[in-house]
Length: 204
Ligand code: APR
Image (cartoon, rainbow, N blue to C red; front, side, top):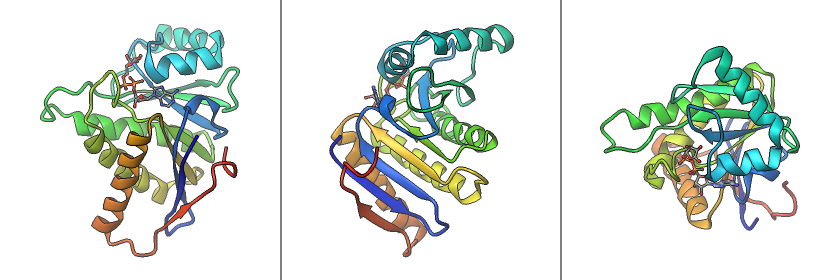
């Protein structure tokens, strides 16, 4: 883990931007960029199943048996297995085609529905990866703008969740998300937002 920036919004809600591995996060939940089968895969999905152990796949199996495949943009929860986070919220981002096929709406839904599920569960914090920015091919800058804007809107209305984290695997992705947050501050003319650099050892 290298850099951490804490963004304090007006309402006492915070967003943390950091580079690192999401599987070690201590938030109440971590979000998995899964696929509709919920049967695991590569990327962050594979990392989460490896770190959490077989209990997560077992729960996913039961969910699919009961409800069928998870449509893109929707979210379901399992326990976190062996990870520190008590829960995993599994969502499915869009596969990038041309940007004209509803990708941004589905991506916003993936962030929003994960957040709302965590809020309904009474959780206080959750960590997101860069959903769709790997195998699914979403251009990082465009994805970061959707992610940051959606999560800020959710934090404003949340009952329970007051901290969201973006845990970015590469320093390039970290910079991209941070830049999107600065752009969003400018767009909203949110003069009271504070960006604070935090020593990596303070937050885990
Ligand atoms: N922690 C945080 N981020 C990670 C980690 C990790 N341990 N491992 C990978 N990433 C990052 C990738 O670098 C990328 O920026 O997560 C982002 C999302 O990439 P993918 O995991 O490929 O997810 P996505 O693009 O949404 O594609 C989903 O990939 O493995 C499959 O089952 C998954 O089919 C689904 C598809």
